[in-house]
Length: 361
Image 1: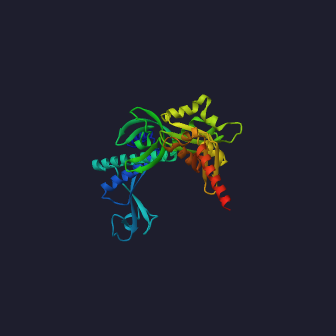
Image 2 (image 1 turned 90 degrees about the horizontal axis):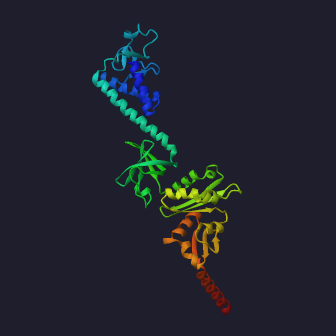
Image 3 (image 1 turned 180 degrees about the vertical axis):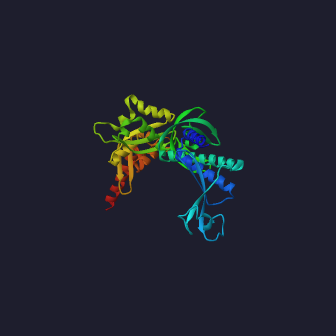
């Protein structure tokens, strides 16, 4: 029995990836449950399994008293004084009990509890493995789509990619292999729930870290990111090495690095800009792909006024105001933009108003 038990524990340990010590504790708990069922739910029953031989020993813990009132918890001193000569009234002893006659019901109970405990240990192991991986990029295989969610395989564990966290212009099918960002992991009654995303800004910055060794080496630093999923992403980068161009490092030779990311996010446009501690320079760069003529800032209110060529105005604003909105998110400055002609007209009106005021004096 002991040898067979050891073999079973070793096999489960290898198949489930659970330590032998953890399984022994699970088995002890399961057998205690079965023993309590067999011996009338006695709360004082305990059981030990030798980790080397897998020999089982069960004990009934009793308190030594002069006169027994509760036979489940107490034992008479007269009854045990010859067996435990070093014990006296008030001490506790462990009385060995036979566990070979649990019977079919007790054995089935032990098996059920064991399987339940193993599942719990598996769930805890999965949770412990992935709780520290929140924020990482993983590669998954799509299993199915159901009730607005994609269920994907993550190293033989099923994770969820909600459709709202997938890109607008993609329709994933069974067998598709994609990358995703681990957004969160939650404990549920059915086990750990791993939530993924392909729409959060961190997904794109994570992809960039995978493609650009200089970022992992902390030579190039991502200073900020703003994203409109499936449309456009803006990323500000800074180089800690004057000899390395941060934008060039991210784009790669002939655009190979950035194109790899663009393919993963289904053609979403990405603007990589060099970060600057001068807000005027940073704001101008953030409005890429448009070029601007002038940037004025109000540092107290953190607002900026930008002037662009008439031909560049619509590009600076972007479709549905997308470009200027992303530039605002990236820089943290509230940005207003005028065309050159609008700015010239405004300046003319201000001068005329100023002349009239002087004339009235």
